[in-house]
Image (cartoon, rainbow, N blue to C red; front, side, top):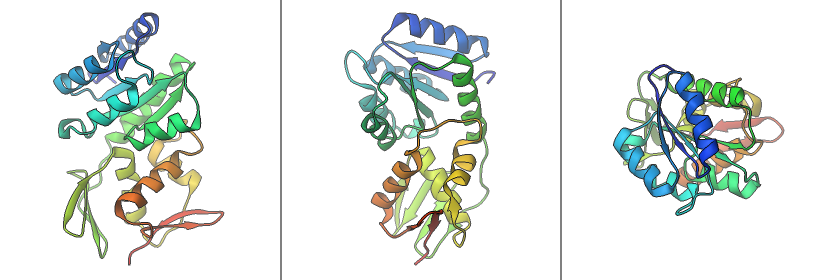
Length: 224
């Protein structure tokens, strides 16, 4: 992770100091913020590769911070990982809905957190060559855009990677464990509902019938 930039956002000074120290040891360039508005400002200024974001902040919460950051074109490829003591399903779902790449519940071991970020960064560096098209949609991997009915859409990174995977092999039914491995990586631990949240968001954006649920197996892209 040498030279990668990480923005750590947490209102607890001890946690902020510990995380900053840990990632500096990994040769990362570290920025810190203890509130949401400062986090947004630093993200816009420094365009970090990773943002480690607490949900409960003193001014605006981490969900709102993530939503605001995702509006900026320059930050479309930034990995956003929520790190929060709140482990309720609805909090995790809210995090994924606004474009979070992962949601980690405190407490977490530093070694696991570090390897999780390393794995996500490695996967984000893997690119697909050339456009991928169906009869009604086109994916442009270099621009991270999805064009449907002549309208170009920019969507969160994990949603984009999931749609790309399914569209690359439209006749294949992908098992849930296979999707988790290919999109999130075997070293990455995500919640049980992660895939469901991302599938639902893709259906909301591009139509309920573009992804078919194959009961008891997984999902496939439907080209019609």
